[in-house]
Length: 488
Ligand code: NAD
Image 1: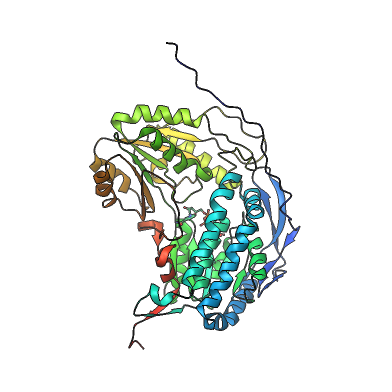
Image 2: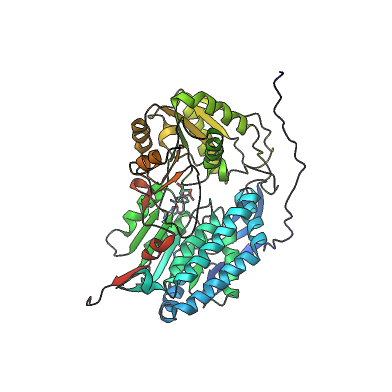
């Protein structure tokens, strides 16, 4: 019988309307419950990475601005901490419901500012951000059950610095547990994606959050450095690169500030020969091409058992040819724009290094838009453990492929990294899953799935992926001082 040609479906354009978004020309800092001009007098522009068009002018906070924001958070701290937990919960529930109500507006804005496909901001970022506020609202009046036999009190003023890959979601991960436990906050969004955090400021104000409880200072590394070093800060929570995490750790050493760090990763996604291979290939694709691979826990190293390597690669390449790369606002788009020119340059440089070191680079034929920042989904085979593409976080849609023969070898290779954030295991055998998960040095291990998130589940790293957990009851612990009966 003649072999059937695979069916390639053409999709008509399905662009999401941007009418729901009402951009201002310029945004100030959100301090003490109101938008104010930066004392620095400086501004920067945030652009749409899919078109390179400027979206808005953003205030850049300097040390004086940071000082004013920390002072506002300090003034609000006592009153906020003294509120009964159920009152704090009420306000957090309001925020969660507002996020649900305005989900479309937030999702479109997130996609415009960051370049991620609308179906991801709509179906992942927004529902999860709302879920985090709901979840921690639930804890706000039950802290005595979270820490049985001990009394939890807030740390005070939390400085929170977040990255650009999940701008609103990272803000939610940071704000919800801090506020539920009675802390006040100064939040610094990433410089390429400040807009959804600034829209969240509107929601917080509408929810009647008292002035000063959340302050938002925009700017780049200097703003972040001024914030974490500020003597009025009691707690620093950082999500971003390992390199900056180390700088922050040095900056706060010896100051008595509490610190949690959520840093980079280089996860192994491990496929055994007994896995359901089609399902595994879907998981591998989701693991590395979701959000253009701008994911700290991305399954960026595929470890595939040698006996099935050829067939898995063939299936992967076939699946790659069906991924739709392009306009992030199109509801059919699978892979959107790279977040910034700088990130595109970094990905390009690392993939070139992969080829120089002897890897074979595969990219499916795909037409990329002429403007904006784009990188096609990429697979690099023939990678060995010493190659840069096996060791360094690329933070782009690039999968490095290595093989293994035994489970022991898979564990050794998976753990041969300075990171320890996440891993994936694909096998039909439950016993093998348990055997692997007890040996993998990673904060999260997914089995026969990947990139699953839930606010009730703690997330965080080992080794140079950081310390402290976000999510779950563990996420509360980063924001409280605990006293046992009889403690001074
Ligand atoms: P980045 O470290 O360059 O920047 C993160 C944030 O820190 C930004 O807001 C930036 O302005 C600020 N910053 C930069 N230098 C600073 C300094 N010296 N002091 C204080 N703040 C400073 O990281 P990025 O490129 O925005 O994000 C990508 C990185 O984030 C990746 O390594 C990724 O793995 C990591 N990440 C980790 C998690 C996690 O949960 N573990 C989640 C998302 C992203």
